[in-house]
Image (tube, rainbow, N blue to C red; front, side, top):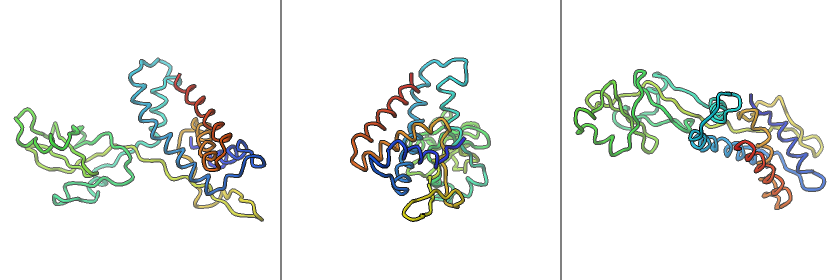
Length: 241
């Protein structure tokens, strides 16, 4: 399902037209490639919010919401009790847990398979003084995340450690490795530093257009930038019709 990084690089070079418009070095390509991947990945969350307001259809392979879920599932992961307990403690005797850097967006926290209600800081701090109907219980645990610190309360407002954290991780940093023969950089497919795009295979075309746009900006070539920008806009419009 991943996108081959060398395929993308070669197509970008072909579109940029080395002889007439300039050359994109491997270092530049890697920078542009990671920026393009980051933009596409972040856009998923905005698109999900937008398309969930629109009625879908019964055809899974053509329903936009289902397609977005398929793309996001690549990055969805869960940390269980042992891993959550091992999170670096941040005060409170280690009960308050600092979320690891690999968590990009957290979307669910559980305590013994029960979903925790995520509260803002003020409401979370006030729950111990709340009435019986609002006081946390083991059947209604609450959690707060502030400055990347996660705190959870259960029965009687007691601090506890969650047993499950559900989140999206960020895509791995891509890298097109190479060796030089003469003055030409050649792809090293056996390099341990090789990292392909983790995005869904359907994103290959948009990756190419975005990288081409960034290359045009870097080389101050309006023709390349506008070509990439135009192709990217056409691709996005087609996807969102």
